[in-house]
Structures are given as C-alpha cells and as structure tokens.
Image: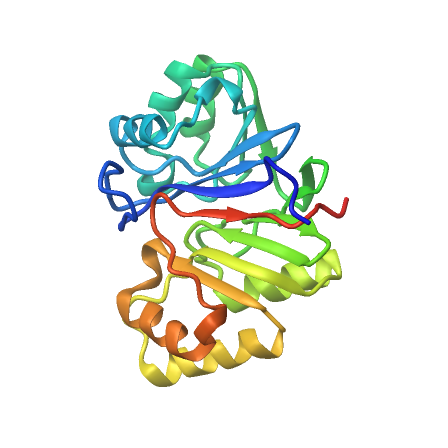
Length: 244
C-alpha cells in the first residue's frame, strides 16, 4: 500500500487542473516523502511559482533540496523567489551549468552541489547525472517497489535515451515516466517510433507535459490508453513504497 506523504505534485506547467493555480510555460515538480521534500525545477516566473505553492498548500521551508534539470529559464527562473522563502535548501545542478550562474548562486546561497554522474539525493531518490552532448541535462529517478519513477525536465538528451540510461544504471523497469518529453513538431511516424521504443523498454505508465507538445500528448493518450495520465499543474500522484 502507498504510505501517506509519498507523492508527486506538479507545481508549475503550461496547463493547469485547478482554476486557482496559474498555468505558465515551464515546469516544477515537488517530491514529498515521509522524511524529505525535493523540488525538481522551479518554473520560469518566481511570483507564479510562489503563488502556485501557496494555492497548493506547499510550504517552501519544508523543502530541503532543489534539483535543476538544465539551465533554461523556464526551469530555473523561479529559483530566486523560492530562495527568498527557503535560503537553506541545497541546490543540485549539472556541472555543465554556466560558470557565471554557479558563481552567482554561491555568492547568494549557502550550498551548491555540482552533478556529473548518477548519485543519491536522499534514500530512494537519485539523479541520472548529466546526459546529452550539447545542452546537458539531469533527470530524477525514484526507486519504488513497482519500478522506477523517472521525472524529466525537458528531455533534451532524448526521452528514449533517458529511459535507456536509467534502466541500465538502476537495473529496474520503469513504472512511471513523467515530465517534459521535448517532442513538439515531431511527426506521427516519429512519435510512433518513440512510443514503440518506450513500450519495448516496458514503461508502464506515462504522463507527458510541458514541452511534450499537444500532438504528442494526444498520440500517447491513444497509444497508452488507461496507462496514460493527463499531467498539468495541480496533479497529485501517489508514489509506491520506496526501494532503496
């Protein structure tokens, strides 16, 4: 059974499930566990991030770590607003972030952890490490008894490549793949190939949002049927019991 306090909450997205929660281009997801809270990405606008947190009942001071997927503004833009509320959180970011960005953070905030390879953020929660060749990006992986939960920011390295990497490193099948898939403008045949690859990788449930594109969302909805989850700001998903 799922234990209370194990959940994902989409705080920031282009679409919203709740009238009081503001939609905006960007992404942020809160991972809540009995002993830990981790914010993955911070959306693009500090005021919208904080407003949505308030509307969703999120207390920033309970968040102990922020994991930034990559250096684009729609994923890091809300950070300044968050740190006005919680300056003690640790920031985990790819080592390839611009030196000026990292230097500014270290001047303003307490602790920055640069990520290159896979590492644990807290028991049961891991980063994939930097992936990709141009713009490098990290994703989050939660190890559960039902399989891996993979959370992506924009999937610039390729959504299939991220899943392949996570499955290889953590040696588990994927229970849930959620986040930005970066598939805007992809043709139906390209989407079919990607969906087929994810199916062969045994991805059980799928929840594309943010930069995935409306066409891709509709395609995956038809392909995955009852295993498809409509993802937008305000979505709450239970996390199966952790497997450390």
